[in-house]
Figure (cartoon, rainbow, N blue to C red):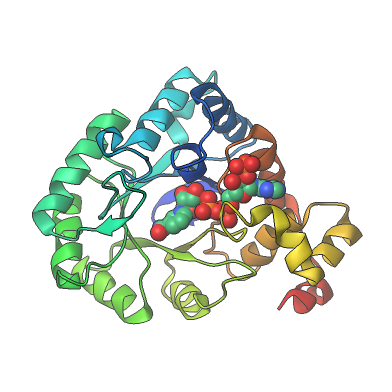
Length: 284
Ligand SMILES: NC(=O)c1ccc[n+]([C@@H]2O[C@H](COP(=O)([O-])OP(=O)(O)OC[C@H]3O[C@@H](n4cnc5c(N)ncnc54)[C@H](OP(=O)(O)O)[C@@H]3O)[C@@H](O)[C@H]2O)c1
């Protein structure tokens, strides 16, 4: 698979998003493990997760545990796989998502993620979402401390605007490795953050790149130009959407979610799909 860079680490240009395997509607463990193994077999070396990818309040880190289990049971060499997790969101168990950007909480959350992943240091730790109750600098300051303490190898932020990206880059002393924002054919308002990351040389990880779990299957029905280009290449509209965002910048690394092996196998092929300038122009 084509390689891209997050900080000083090379990863396959298409990553795997772990959320559909751990939140509402998730499959059984065997299918999830098969999905993660299919991703690794296809050359995926970035897996995105979060401690908040779970359903009940007493199963925090469900997805991290699943990923650790899948990496341990995979037949190949998983040493080059970058697991990117996040802290700052919580799920009390009633279906809601709350935020907690308290520095002491973030440091405890990172310690717990580190244990669940079974590593000496977390490959990439991302502050999940700004907490309006806590100054952004304080939350990102906790991430900087984790970096300085060697508990995380790289630092990232998520759901950030351009000002927050610049602020985080300053607080982290130029060590901001990644920004993870929503970006898809349906949701293009993260274009300024994508452009800023391109300019600063920071990896941009589009999340929900196919429009989100419930709408990913309808991408071709909702966006005719993607369906047309897909027909011309004999591939899925989902592959075209991923190839389209890869073409936006060499710093883009999409993380399509999957709960079935065939979904991530199809998505992974987008790394090899080159679209013509005319096709790209038709997609916007
Ligand atoms: N930072 C944040 O705040 C945040 C928020 C949301 C998501 N995320 C991250 O971003 C990742 C991706 O976002 P997402 O999972 O919300 O949405 P998504 O990637 O837009 O859509 C996921 C769904 O797409 C389907 N799919 C994947 N590849 C496909 C293909 N080639 N053809 C047809 N369908 C395909 C999968 O179906 P099957 O389930 O049937 O395989 C999956 O459920 C998440 O898993 C999570 O890691 C981060």
